[in-house]
Length: 316
Image (cartoon, rainbow, N blue to C red; front, side):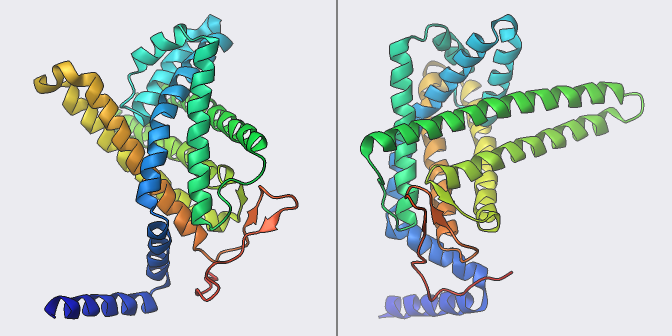
């Protein structure tokens, strides 16, 4: 059959490329691991919980800022709105602000449950990629640990908002002072690129947390950094597409009565593709040979066994 011959030729060509290039071979092995556990389906399930968790974290962020610094809540809320507009443009910051003003105890519990569900699904999906027990330990202890991880990620979110807002204020001040020395376009470009670098640094910290803290693994930085950078780049691309999508829907008369629905669909797609990127990055980390990885969910800690002992060892 011609089709079989073409398929054999493609496979032979791919094997030849893999034999010549270790990075490409690593990508093939990572995709095989990702596809072997139905990574696309797991990304869809995780995105479902992430969809609700995004609203949960957004509402809680506004509520915490409003409660913690009521005297200067305007500046804090503006910082949160600016952060969400840049990182999750599909979320309506004004609606979240109004929701946070009416938040109650029952609502907080509902939001926590949504967030913990997201952490649990993301943790179990990543541990499946590492060929580890997906739900380690006692259920109650495991739920509390997932809650603690959610709190850590929420704290990182608030800290990143504060740092980004503070550094941006400093940069804008420097730009105003340098207007007499620098060309306005150059000063504005400096602020834009520096702001982008700060955002990438914040995203890198969050990516490392998602890939190591959530699945409860300890791995060398050299094994973690490349998958984390993939998450940062992928997230940056999704942000650009998200802002373009929201701009198109807001200025398109056809979507005038469906702006909220379009934003919800956009957020769901954003979460779906983002979790695909995260899970593939986790597959890259799981199939890497750089350093030793420990499973922190066990007492005493256990070294994660290499499921591919015959894979080439990368020493660079």
